[in-house]
Image 1 (cartoon, rainbow, N blue to C red):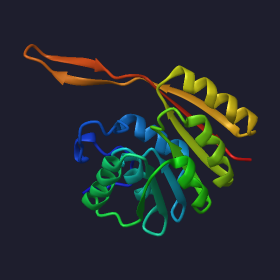
Image 2: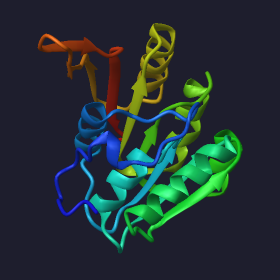
Image 3: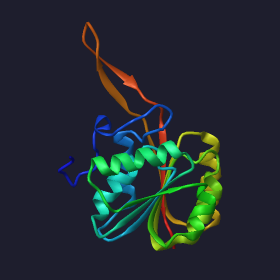
Image 4: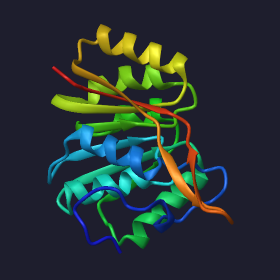
Length: 196
């Protein structure tokens, strides 16, 4: 299906349904690179949506690694499973429910991605800090300015190191009857950090 080690699977290769978000290909590529994944690692994808981060992470940690994909939306869980099957990946486990409850029962992680959390990002970062191995990486995709401020505050309080903030604004081409135009997508801020 995707015969490359390089992240950046085109969005159109993923199964999609209305009202289940996808982390767009270019933003996903940056998030995957910020996690610094290796084979055999354990990864959480909190707010997995369509599973695009889970799929990309699964390829990076290889079959001897593990991805735990969490979402409160049953449609997102079903879609993540469908995409895992489509890409023939067997190292993704889907977990339906509230991430603030489900994270508590999970094994320690080498990397944690936090995406669509329904406004609970700060609390999820606090819980994730306890589940992240020393030296582990956290990567958070943020759209709202208010979320950005609260996440930076909590990362500082929890004494994460190497905090990096990258804002990504992507424009994609679209053919028109007279030529090609560039359409801007919403900016996304990617915060990454290392647990001491």
